[in-house]
Length: 292
Length: 274
Picture 1 (cartoon, rainbow over the protein chains, first blue to last red):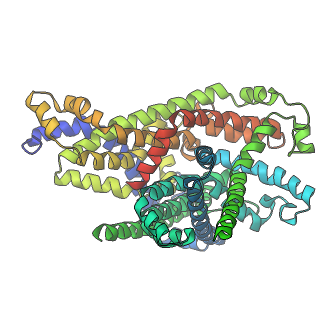
Picture 2: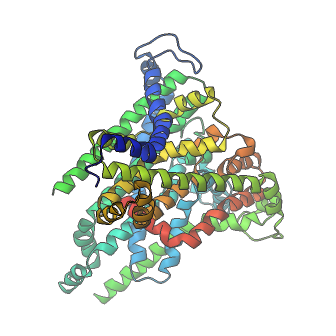
Picture 3: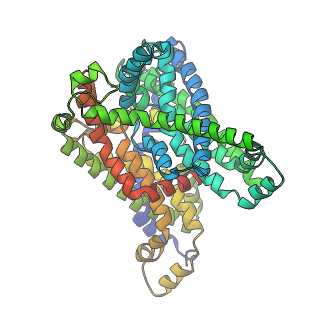
């Protein structure tokens, strides 16, 4: 029935089924994207542009030490948050799938932070870092907490990583749980009978069988880390002294605070290229997996 | 062997305790301090000392114009999620059943567009819609969410529809039903699992989103995350009210979680695998 539809009918169906959503997609996403890519080569000041300036905006962006700093910081943040979110996420998945009491409550405790949204998370932890932990540090004489992490450029970075773990580990836990549950119990039983220790079972049986879950979580956390914005804004606002300004916040500030629209758009396009390269790697890896 | 095993168990318990403490303690202190007076919190944020009261909640409720922000959030979230469900499922059906060259191209463009980070669109987006005076309106925000959310939801529906057999649809077609009727009466009911998955993911996104509404909405139509943001900024020194405000913003999503737990967990797991 679908094959012998003539052109006129197809056009009618297109209008009924596809025209409106594709219009929204076109005007909301495609046109601004193409316009943005074009404007990054002009002397656009947010209101108008008069001439093409070639790569000038890109040169300006790359000569901005604050941008380079936030680029490097973003890579550092991506590196640590991807590793730590996955280590914690996988560990708590193992924990709640082992024979431990109160599994369901634990699962909810680990997962609930993820539901709250970045702005709320940032504010909750602002209170924790600047009040609770400082008070705790004074009471126990722990130098680690004697000052608020948020006023120290180096510790503020780790504060962001900690909040990221709190936000995302529970989400990854759910995906890892699905992977662990998917392993056939025969395998584990056979290994137990053969005398493999729980640790050995974990590294040599469970983890290799869960390769797919690791790939999914790895790329999801990578994407989340590059795109991080809300927590950054609510927790540190990029401070102290711009020491924790990730790339997304840098673009935002450059455009809407400093009104450097051209440069900010050039930064945004470079950011897009970095994210695309990672997405391409992901696609090629999952394609190769499908062929195996 | 036995000693080694119990040592392993002790180790596991310690880890379990530490991890649970890490995940639970921020929320515990949030809850406790939201009931406490400003001076008591300054005095000692770690204890229950002083009188506990609902006063902070009453103040926060007023000051953040809770009812209005909550209603705005609810309207934006539900309408946008329903709109995406409606349009993306139809689009996916059209693209999956008529695999012409044009439709294949449309599908690829949708898939590729998922890579584009919001920051790459944000500046020209604000420029265009500012010029057109289409910022500051809730219906406009819903339309933007449709545009931004369309590709992922369509992609997920598309994969699901491709695996459905067309025989039921053909039978309905022979009986003379129009394609629109066939889709809503025959196809859409079969899409229930994927509808639940995409709906949950979209609801969580729209409810918690800050950046896009912050660029689009003004005072009277602002959503809960925006109200929370301004509110917290104003009350950074009065932690009692600030914590109560955060609690108020959290409660709806926690209730949503309690009632929809199975769908949320299922949605996230299914959504990730696809």
